[in-house]
Image (cartoon, rainbow, N blue to C red):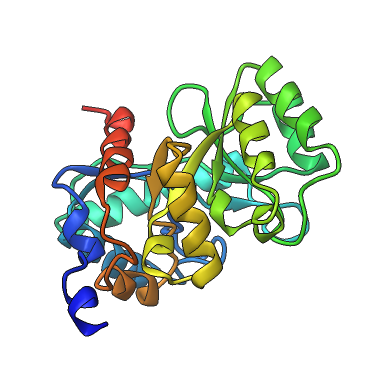
Length: 246
C-alpha cells in the first residue's frame, strides 16, 4: 500500500504556472471565506506559490445567508486590489459570484445583471441536501436570459451519486461542470472523490476551481491524488486558460 501511495502525484505539482483560479472565497469578511485582508493576503500568496497567477474570486450570494450585492462585491474588489498592490501583488484579481440557485437567484437574473466569471459564464451551486424542485426550469430560464451556467463542485452533491444519469441530464441541458480540485485528494471524503473520478473518466468536467476558503484548504494541496491516471485531470486543468484576461 505504501508503495502505491508513494507513486501518486501531489496535487499542487499538477497546477501549471499561469493558472487561472475561477472559484474561491478570498474577499475579506463577506462570506464564509477570508475573515480579514491579512487572511486574504496569506491565501493569495499561498495560491501564487502553487502556480496561480490570475484570480476570479466568487463570494456567495445566497438569500438570508449571504445577502451580498453586486455593488458591495465590486466595491470590496476594488479595495482588495489596492491593498494587494500595496503589498507587492499586482496581478489580475477580479470578483464574480457563486450563486445559489433559488427563487432569489431567478429574480436577480430576470431583473438585473449577474457577476460573471467571463462574458456570460456564471457560477452556480445548489444545496448539498437536495436539488431545487425547479432546477431545470431555472437552468432553462437562465440560458434564455443569455447566461451559460457552470455548476460548482457537482461531485459534492451526494444525492446524485447513486443516480449518475442526473449528471448526464444536466450536461444535456447545457450545464457546464467545475471540479473542486481538493476532491481528488479525498478532502471531502471517499464517496466524493469516487464521484469526481468517475466524472473525470467520463469527460464530463469543463473547468476546475480551488474553492479555497482558509488555510486548511491550502494545506490540502500538498496531499496526493487518490489515483494514478492523471490525464483527464490535467486536461481539465488546462481548460482554465479560457478565463485568462491577457
